[in-house]
Image 1 (cartoon, rainbow, N blue to C red):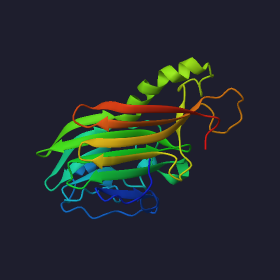
Image 2 (cartoon, one colour; image 1 turned 180 degrees about the vertical axis):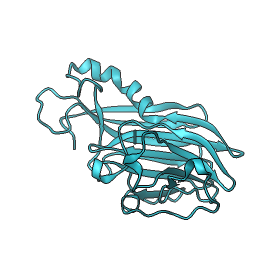
Image 3 (cartoon, rainbow, N blue to C red; image 1 turned 30 degrees about the vertical axis):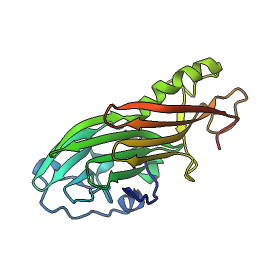
Image 4 (cartoon, rainbow, N blue to C red; image 1 turned 90 degrees about the vertical axis):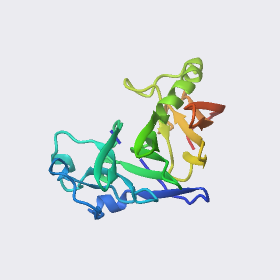
Length: 231
């Protein structure tokens, strides 16, 4: 179910958020939402540079009272659901160790949705848009997991838990980085580990670096560096 951090790149529009949502900030939409989405709001700092698109999510004060909800990418006026953004464990809320980061490419043709939990990125999703429709929806965290799993298996380390062999780790100080290099490439620089607490002797921790080609949705320039422990 649901991450984030901020920096400014010359080529991309980035927004770091979390605090505003947790404080109950509700951005005003250009047109009312349909009744079916009366409990939803624009996620703070998720609106695209051209103002046409945004992410919507349940209002903070009703989030945990809803049985079913999702994170949606929408057009704002007229209102239209474009796609559900996949989530894992994160609720995006600070009291549940959640966070998020929304990074738009400057012409609003692509967006990175980074959802976080206590230890770091939980789910990173790329959505690209063409003529008002979603052209590509890609789970970048899954792509990284697939590319790193062989190195994990070769290490002989025990899995992180029964659900995951390893997790994404971030100190909040740029230990993890997902960003647009340009309109066709995304740079990935992240930490993966089986031991975020640094308490297991035979742990597996790596820095994973790669470039995702947006047009072919493939990783290239993959570099895996073993680390003695999580930074």
